[in-house]
Image (tube, rainbow, N blue to C red):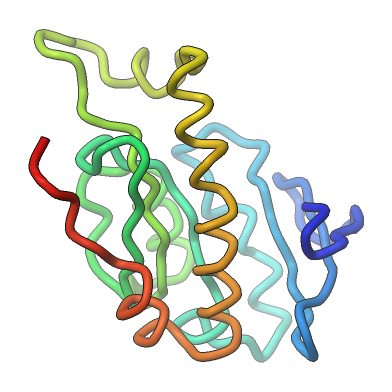
Length: 163
């Protein structure tokens, strides 16, 4: 939040809201305070704006199908079984919005409850990996703001070398 000098703002029900700027662009960051399955509720304010979700919205979510320490940008797509993204799609009436999917995987072998996995606290080594990734993800967000999703995807989506 400090990178963009974001300040708290009362904007959306069901979310903590922060606003700031990057260059000439106003940024608004929403962190849903609802259960993940209701994340889309935080987007109700969009009905009162002229924002185009396909251009002006970037949704950031975890993804256990992507390895920890990596992320992928996409211009659109399905929720892929992610209940939070399904809620966003329902709220928007479309899956045409950019997303930054942050790797938290893989799921441990034999795990029966994936919710338990994604809600568990990070191990110290995992937290370091995520902390090291944050500046790169912020660079990717800034690239998206300045140049759009296609350029950000080209610059920041990389294949992970095999193990």
